Image (cartoon, rainbow, N blue to C red; front, side):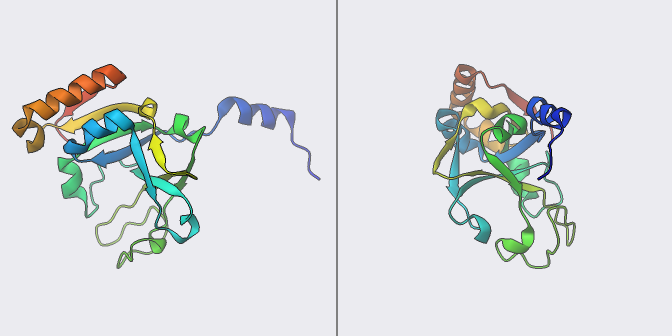
Length: 175
């Protein structure tokens, strides 16, 4: 039996797990619902987690270099407090060998091949439901997104709900 040093135990208790910011990208049309309910945990598709529910996030604030970059340029970026989330939920990296039959991608979560940058981290829950809006630090909307320019009513609705939830909304030039 090994003895835990008191200093190591105190360090673990006082510091907690340091995760940093996590990013979730969603179409502007989904933001109103997210502000009402939070981010929804979906049934996971990875063998090791089939009995769990997850939310897909990334550590990459722009997700450039990934095939979905064209999507993220048009999407809203939800910035999450990974440190706070990790106190209640498990957060784990995704190994691309285990998901979606991604062709030509081998290695760990930092794989860079054929233009892919995979920095996916999933937030796991044992039960379905929603991640509270309390974990949202801010929402960034790319000002190149035509959705908000074409739908001023939706944009105003998002601003009103964000104000109620005390979540800053930022218009940004690029991710």
